Image (cartoon, rainbow, N blue to C red; front, side, top):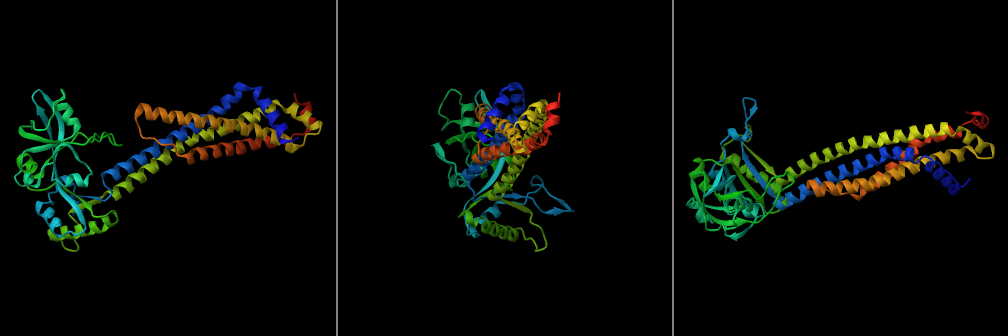
Length: 406
């Protein structure tokens, strides 16, 4: 019997049990759909994180206080006050591979404009912050080095703060608002960025001269951090080594002493997040893949039932000349049709689910063509693997005993 005839017989047999056939497919449909949706979420998250890190500047370097061991316990950044303005000045004067650098201090508080108020952070930086974080001022202007020197009470705000303090649409530039009890003049509005992958509003920020935040708000003489960017992404490691040497000299650390500061680069952060995201994607895909395994077991189970129900039919076919391999091929084709058809429907379900997740939850998603191809190959393999045993069992039946079977 040729393949064409075997295919007709298989389709006819499946058509006689439509509901059972569909229920058998359901496990494969759900499994494939879940795998494609999970992989799309994982891949979309990875790409979104990479793009946002690239937008922030892949050559960005962050320096934090803390990092030394005291009594066998590593100190946290909150417990350390090891970064001083003199450290920042030393890096500015001595580092040769740093293109931009800014001190960083933060304070949380309430922004007030008349009857309108909004809770947000105030970040103290210098004018080079915009170059490091690849931001720009779209209205008004950024504060200058002169503003930094005299600790001027000026601020550049993001769109979220502007909208909440001026809900009537009034132009905020030039207006005086209060941060707690400190009056601040708005001199500029930052470009709109929206939410990042972590759900953080990138427009909910305000920038002021770091000297203003240190002297007028926090009343401190130490920095909470330093941000810098290397002249080139390829020189990031060289820049980190250079800054490390400068700060160790500044802090008079002996060779056997640990650093009392921590340096991180965006490359390091990107690799860490990418690795974590990849592990989560694999985990989600593995969990979803269990549905495929269950679907395969369902195919094998229903094909064994089908062989049992059609034992007499198999005996009659063998008695009129059908070979064992023809019987095997017939049941194997039935199993593959169920599996592949379920796979195709599952791919469509996965694509639809991915679109729904993107449209409703606003999550970044991306369907990788390789995941679709892999799902299709796996479905075919499931049909062959789980359909082989029932097909082999059917082909090994004794024709005489099969015809007598009731």
